Every structure is written in C-alpha cells, then in structure tokens.
Image (cartoon, rainbow, N blue to C red; front, side):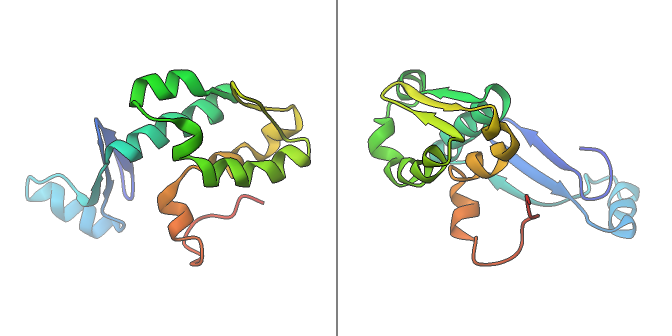
Length: 135
C-alpha cells in the first residue's frame, strides 16, 4: 500500500505502513519500506479469509468448495460460527442449509457483521473497542 497507515497484502502476509507522515517519510529517505508491522497468516487464517471474501463479495458460501480447498470439515471446524449465524437466520438475514450460507436481501446491509463472525482475530479481541463500529 502507498501512503501513511496503508495496509498491504502480499501472499500470506499483511503489513501496515507507519502511521505518521514523519515516520513514513523517514523510512523512505533511509531507503527502507515504511512498514511498521506485519502479520503472517496461518492456514486457518487463509481459510477464514476465503470464507469472509466469499460472503462479502458474493453474498454466499458453499461448504463443499471450502472443504475441498482446505481439507476440513466445515461444520466441525466452524461450529461456533454456524451457531452464531443462527441468530441472523432467525432475523431473516441469512439462509443456512446443508449446502452453505446465503445472505438475504436484508442481510446485505449487515454483511460486514455477518462476515466478522469468521474473523478469529476480531472475535478474540472483541472486548476491546479497537475496531471501527459497523452500525
């Protein structure tokens, strides 16, 4: 990413640039990338990223392709997330069946909240108000 605080993704790594213009410019003047921090993704992170992207971009997720791509039993691995999705299903925001998850028309308005259920880093950190609010 270009600019202060920009986030980049290269393969299985995310990085964030320096948060102040002074730090950013100083790194560039020294001939260094202005990266302040990074995160190498695990296989679980990569699988979750594909799930989140599918929900946010296509509004649906089929279990079988995820199971084949990541060699997992979706319902077993994401039992807690599927349980949490039941509330959204009861509100008419998603349809759940044996094949997968599909957002309803109303569900698109809360797609971020629905997809966030699969972000383990966010779920582990949800007690702290670090992340932007969605509503």
